[in-house]
Length: 518
Image 1: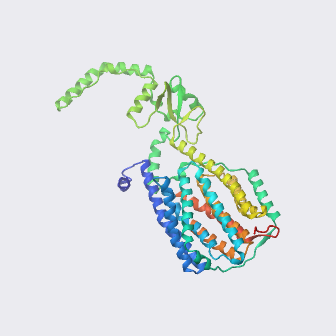
Image 2: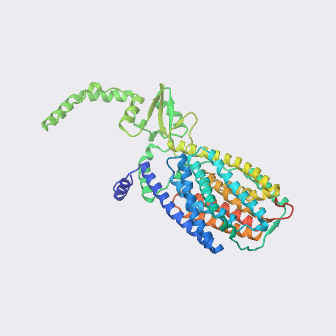
Image 3: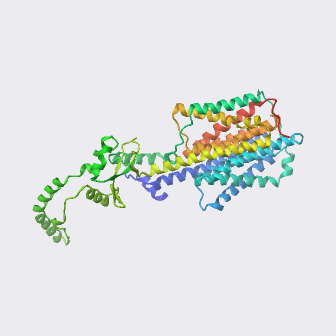
């Protein structure tokens, strides 16, 4: 298919072509490019940031080789359950280095004098991340489940890899840095979370709606072909097709939609249909001249050595609207009528921007894909809410302090309110890509505040948070250069969400009144 596509593209604009397979070729190429470029660039940038802040070749080597192991175990976890892996999921594995970096940094150089608090932060971070990806396994989307399996398998593989290097991790030491912080009371953190939740209710939760175009990668060549065929097919209005049940003639079935301005009858094949009286007049004239004309044609062909059986004029008959649409569908690429269980349906394309009217059956694949993706988005949103509730219980058990749990969740409250306000102002909707990004933000961003508050904002632990946060922004920031829109939007969502959480963990300190669990 790639060779056919390249050949047709080389002949353009003399040759015009269209087909779903050609879009699939360009999507495949874009994702393959992202796998190579983003994975390589993300790993290099992350390793540079990591070494610049640690200066330890041993840890750098563990991160590099451990990331290779986690990639292999993540892919293996998917292959246990699925024979094929989505290319987008393979490109997503370029972000594994962000998860691996957090595990490595927080497990290395644990201060023996603060061992209990450091380990409290580690288990808080790892536990919430695992919960965040476990809930994704309950979703119906195969792509989402594959991402969850890749993340869980990659994390397990990296932790198993680090287990063999426990002495090296214990011997590592990190330098602590100090900077000004805003100290807030537990009551203030509580007020921020409550105010953000109230703000979300007042502003309103944006619609969860995903359109299949979000997953389509196009090039100037494909855009030119779309424009070419759109101009020629615009008269047929094939973008949003519906079937209308008819109990009489097809013209009568479409009349209410035409009167409401939903269907342009001038763009429908019925506009060329001639009624029975006009057909009978044409057939009467045809029967008079038809025998002589066909005899002359047959004689000319026989002189050239060809013999043609011409049907008699008596076989022609007057057609009703259903006969006309049935014959038109038999010789053309588009069906304009259908019969199901004795019911007759006339098919028509709605005007651009028109909503599907009640009582009709939408036939456009785009409609069904959009409905499926939007349904998956809503399903994932509910799964995340359930996952967050489980995380809250888990953190409550570890931290033994409601204020500390709210501190961990505070950046998520702030981010949710900010996004809802932005969506209200711009009219934007939440797509499945945003939901996917939110799962990663939950898995990564909560680690910053969990480690920070567990260690009572100690300089060494905050330096580790700074290191892991910068590496995460580096590994996901490279997705901004991805060709495929799904990965590019994923990079935007994760970078913004993790950036807010990182700033909160580094510069907002929880004051006295909420001690860490021993």
